Amino acid sequence: MAIGGQGPGASGRGSHVGGRIGVLSLVAATYFIVAGGPFGLEDIVSKSGYTGAILILLITPLIWSLPTALMVSEMTSAVPAEGGYYVYVSRAMGPFWGFQEAWLSLIGSVFDMAIYPTLFVEYLGHFAPAMTAGWRGAAIGVALVAVCALWNVLGVRVVGGSAVAMGFILLAPFAVLTAYAGWNHATGGAATTPLRGVDLLGGILVAMWNYMGWDNTTTIAGEVAQPQRTYPVAMAAAVALVAVSYLLPIAAVAATRLDANAWSTGGWADVAREVFHHSVPGEVLAVAITAGGLIGAAGSLNTLTLALSRLPAVLADDGYLPRVLAVRHPRTGAPWVALAACAVAWAACLGLSFTKLIVLDVLLTGSSIVLQFVALVALRIREPELKRPYRVPGGLAGAVAIGAPPAVLLMLAVIRNQAEPVGPISALALGLILIAVGAPLYWWREWRRRTAS
Image (cartoon, rainbow, N blue to C red; front, side, top):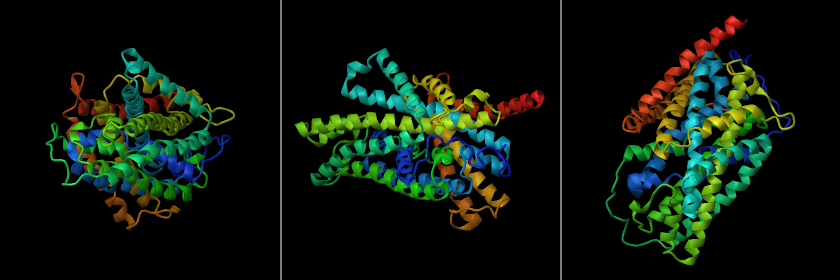
């Protein structure tokens, strides 16, 4: 077990025959893991209006993303191991809590990873509705999951390099839209049409999802060149890139006084058409944005597949999951059996709606992030002399303080989840049931390990 530095990943365990990635690839991979472009922000505008959306997108990274990025930078620089948060939570708090961290992340990933094929199909439907009608949409979602799993078998360097190229391609149309909307802004103030469905908590929840995922990059620390130096630089660059790519397009469109009620999930292409007054350049840009939406969804799914597939492989190395999940590809080092198993689990949740997927993902993954903040403090207390190339400022008090804002936001997400039904129960009830399963699952597995020895 990963206790006292002697467990899995403590020495950077993992096959690296596929090579390591550097700062640029890690920034691009982090950007796709967290954002994948401004896609998914449309619901924030429709729920909160332009002013509300801009305020939410300004405040959320300060109290949700920045603390998480700082925590990730310290923990990864101190414990740069494959398995990331599972390893350092185990080291700080013991194997039980390490397993709970892994459980929350894995079960959260089931809902998180279904979001991106859903968005992919949404954007494809804007471009070619007939292609996604009926059973075709589900088939396309399953196919995308399978393609990303196969893509990841090629290894971390291929996934990281492709993330850089895809990032430039998907952001280019938004740069054009931002420049045009900003240059051709309307006069007379912002649009004043009342919102038809105000839901500030819903907007905050969507923003939390759009700013979530910084910790997922830690699971590939064993495949990153000089992780102690690379992670703090990559986290800072990715936070800035995410914030800018979110705020600038919405602020520029707000200046045109386009009705906020016109925004809908997957509707960036329609926004571009309206801003360009349905001209030929607007139609061209709408197609480019739709293509960018496809790239963003595919890129996010691909990089998250890279990050999340390492977790079951490390758990299998530790004996908590079947050993076969730890099998790596002999040439690339990719855990190909874990990739296949994860792909099947992710595809199983493709039938849930976008909103239901988000509320469950935020509750489960948000809980795992709060547990990491607790581990940050615990490791400071248990191992104060541990070498930390990057350290959260403010001593122990600073480490405690940065965990408070994310915990408050998670409480708001819990309140919102009470109102979202999933079958006969609420999303909150389902999420709490899934969280509670982690403890007996650990005890059962420990019993099996003891009786087998």
